[in-house]
Amino acid sequence: MSKPQYRSEMGIISDVLGVVMERGMQGSIISSIARSANLSHYVAVEKCQKLVGFGLLEYVSNDRNHTFIVTGKGIQFFHEMQKFIEMVQSIKIRY
Image 1 (cartoon, rainbow, N blue to C red):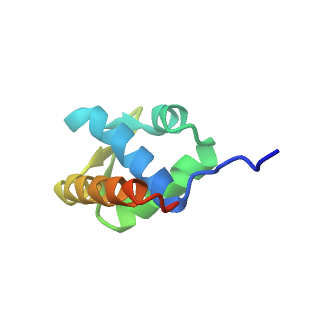
Image 2: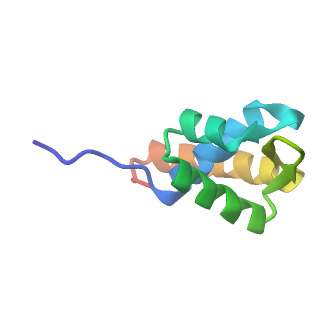
């Protein structure tokens, strides 16, 4: 029996950015991010706050909703990270 493979920090960040990017300029609420990225609510909030701190996501709050929107820097980072992940997978290194 082999041990299950868990996602790395980079894998989780890639998933979170990908989910928010799919929603476009309208952004995504945290429950949607958590569900789509297969994360607990707490972990999703933690990762999103980290990405806001790095300038990759923007946090917008109105009367009812708290929304995360990907920034231009976040889009660029996501695309560069995807290239890196593809390269790593092609030479069979676990990232």
